[in-house]
Length: 136
Image (cartoon, rainbow, N blue to C red; front, side, top):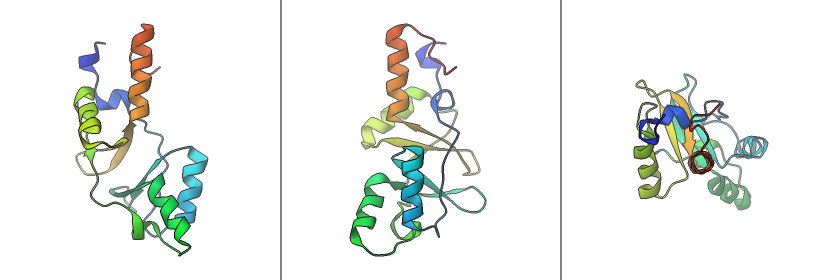
């Protein structure tokens, strides 16, 4: 497969850890540490994306000493993409918006994956080594 043919679906992670808006920030923090992740999608009971938490947001909330729920600090104005989006277009979005991840949603707004800067670094590593670009 040529690099120009890659889509977000070819790079995204689909084994996701998520939280609900009513969850405690301490729970979100535990999930982030357990999964070694920096961005945590927030979904409603139907699996629709409603927000995102960053590691920085969670750290600030914990440092404040106040009890917070995910809903109190989640970012609601998220940057999303679709699985069929060309990988190079999503990469441009990450660079232009200066963000570390893009949440991937289907046509109904349901969360189906996440693509991160790390996914693109892995793609570059594989390309530099002459390995197949698709994940095995």
